[in-house]
Amino acid sequence: MSAALLDGTAVAQAIRDELREEAAALTAQGRRPGLGVLLVGDDPASAVYVRNKTRACDELGLRHETVKLPATATTAEVVSRVRAFNGRADIHGILVQLPLPKQVDAELVLGLVDPGKDVDGFHAESVGRLVQKRPGFVACTPAGVMELLRRSALPVAGRRAVVLGRSDIVGKPMALLLLHADATVTIAHSRTRDLESVTREADVLVVAIGRPGFVRTGHVKPGAVVIDVGMNRIEDPALAEDLLDETRLAAFRKKGSALVGDVDFKRVREIASAITPVPGGVGPLTIALLMKNTVASAARR
Ligand code: NAP
Image (cartoon, rainbow, N blue to C red):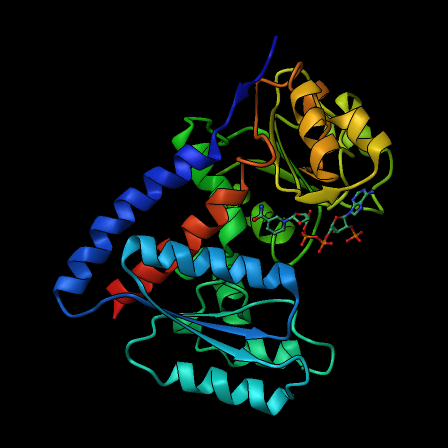
């Protein structure tokens, strides 16, 4: 058996098509959705993420404004930019691109984002609302996974879900969303004993650990739905040889690197019932959900 491929790019496109119409309707009412982005320092990966997000805004007709601060910026400087976005009526969503430079107090900065504009869902008020199952902004990656499951007609109610990874931005909110969708949820992490026997219980296994190809067939119950949140750039030829199929290996040899998930996709797809590829699985949904949160924020005002 070979698993059904869950096409995140197609699902993200469907979400964007819906949002384009919604954004146009809001714009016609004089409420064009707007995203304010704060980019501090010169981390190349962060610059790419920000570019992808502002491109998505352009594609959907959202206003966006990026404030760039140098790597030497102080907490006070970052805070004053957040406050400026908080006070703007034409900015409905605020995104502070992480990571912030070491000297900046990230906790303080994120805590000052207006919870009504917290489209990343990282503010303690947003997290609290999620815990209590009240309406609020939900972190984009786990929200994207739920959309992918829903739109792929993969129900989770009553099923055993295991979330591997317990970060604030993926694992924990993911577990809460699955719980609210009536799954029976286990959270596993680096201190979990006999991990394989825990993950093998999962009807739905969501993996977010940042370890290339870590989840092997031994971790997976045959017929499980496997969602791979991991995004890892690999450069080691031996690892590439192990994890990639012939086509991707040829591309790796030319380029010297490849993007892989946390799951041994090549082998696990042979036993799972459905699986997300990397790239083209969960990744595209994160930005689509950021857009969705921004449009929803504008609609609420
Ligand atoms: P993180 O903050 O580094 O958290 C990793 C989690 O995995 C931790 O809870 C850690 O356990 C657990 N873990 C690490 N090694 C493990 C092991 N060998 N066995 C069991 N658990 C292990 O990572 P994150 O921010 O959640 O990101 C995870 C992955 O998702 C990364 O590859 C990241 O690039 C990717 N990601 C993708 C998107 C997207 O848009 N697709 C968005 C966000 C993140 P402990 O808590 O015990 O240390």
